[in-house]
Length: 281
Image 1 (cartoon, rainbow, N blue to C red):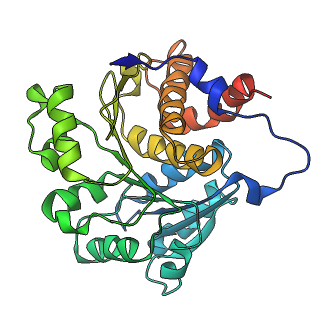
Image 2 (cartoon, one colour; image 1 turned 180 degrees about the horizontal axis):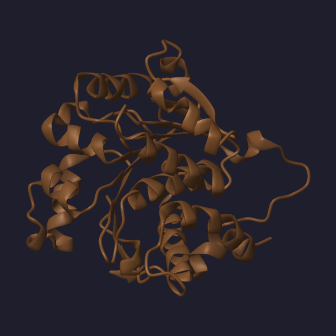
């Protein structure tokens, strides 16, 4: 097991050059936010926007349009029942699915659609309700994405893997992860007070940053969006995911110096400033 260190940020985050445009910094599609949980997909969206994804689209329930555009006018909106969603899935670099998605029939149809239209050139980040659905129906796990990133907290991982929280050791987690995703490039981000990151080559990384002020609703949704923003810009490799995990907690630690509770939306606001500090040539 290796510890994630701050130098992962300078390794991954690159200084932006003049002769570039928004298309050079990745296209992210976030899918989620039913009629009760619009905030989840908005917080994920802010994670992607504030880490610099060039183009961000959000497919969500129509009830969320006003709130989304009031907070984040940079994001393109699509009603998730629109037939154009299928074609949009195939056109982006990264799909983030799950925050506030729900677990009903329509949510399962969304996962089926993703499975049909994602390609080997894309990264797929599955979070929250998407993982709850997979725990019930593993056959809905998309098979064609270039890289799949799973981002469960420990209870979601218990439902998905069958391993109870006290027994979630590195060896047990790796065995369950490899059984779940066979012969495909994949990364598991197991969120806890010390998040562990696994790949299906058997490597294990632990994140030393983070604090209890971050134990609040929406923190995981924000991380999913940050991972989406990083993999869209810097590629769907393990280093991009490690950097996203580290930056997320680093921002939380900076805010915790003067705040008892770290709000996910406040954390997102700090991301761009921290990235500028660590951007390499």
